[in-house]
Amino acid sequence: MRWTPVALWVIGWAAPGAAAAAPQPRVAGGPDAVLGPVEVARPARGPLVVVREQPESRLVAVRLAVRVSEPPGLEGAARVVLELARPQLEAAAAALGARASLERTATHAVYRLVGPADEFERLAAAILGVAAGPGDAAPGALAAARVVAEAQVAAELDTPEPLLRVKLAEALFPELGEASGRGADLRGLTSERLARWWSETATAGRAAVVVAGGVEAARAVAAFDDWPVRRARRRPARTVAGRGGERPAPMAAPAPPAPQVVTRRLGLGYPATRLDPAALTVAAALLDEELVRAGLTGATAEVWWNARRRALVVVAAEWPRRGGEAGAGSLRERLERAVAAVAERADGAAVARARRRAVRDVLFAARSAEGLAEVLGRMLDRTGEPDAALRFVAALERVDAHDVAGVLRVLRDARPEVIEVAP
Image (cartoon, helix red, strand yellow):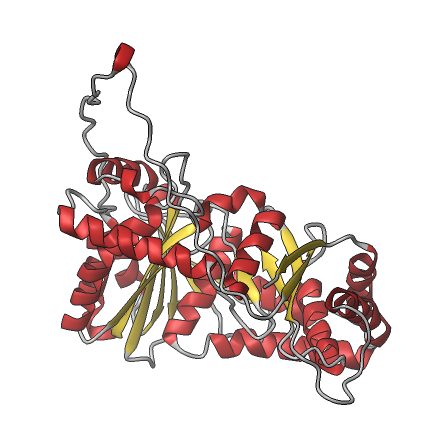
């Protein structure tokens, strides 16, 4: 889930904004054109389409993201829908010499394909085919999808660092608690319920496609001119006779697994919604350097960010200290000292170095068609702006020592959310 070594952890939220029907170029604000220009269009019957042409590339990456919301009783539905789609998308990719992946992020269901640019129309058709939803899933396929979805949730809850991140996300971004699927009973997700929910969720207005690689913008937009999802027919609700006409009690959700913790892990989450994300990112890069200087092996500083909230998060494990290692006190005290100390080191040279690192990390992540589609798509998920990646890099290049010092002062005086996972 992390994007770069600075770790802009992606928590996308906003719906894609409206755009003109014809492709409209958006030009990068800075001299670097790795991330742009992009072409933006919303076909009459389709989703938002963002295209970054790379005429020299023989590959094309297609990324479709659908913003999802799981009401009570449907927690975990997106994971199951994705697992039902996985075999179909992977088979289509294999037939075209392509690669497929699917992911449930904190706010989106994401489908990805990367393959030969010459096969673009067939790649687009494959992704549209699975976006149509689960339909009448066979009982065996549905049962298998539930098992895999439950295993995904278990993997996030029975190992210490993923569990720490889930708990931190719930504390800092409470509106996103449904995404983890904690405590969900997937046995109630029938084929009919999934199909109805998906048809109501996966509308063109909640979907966005990013295409990067050797495909012209007009060709890419034409491939998504019609959105395949249709509203499922509602069937009369069946009731089961019970005492006094009552419905049977719902099945109890399976108990969450016990986390397998050997080493204590600690997370500090500093709410930073009012702080500039570019300056916050450079501050996180500086804090990463300070954590190494303080001997906190494996500790990282990360920016977690969506349209509603932002936070700077420090995650660390309490490893046995080596002989002569500096720094007394508890793990929390050492982390808080590092946050306070970095403000003293944020001079012009240090900020310039951290700024270059942050820009380099974004551009390095976008070095391939697949990486470029992911960078553009994740920033689009996060902000709802098709050119958000371009704007973010331009903002990074403008960050100075004064901006970072202001951010660090706020963080130093803030009261963080503290989450611990202990043996």
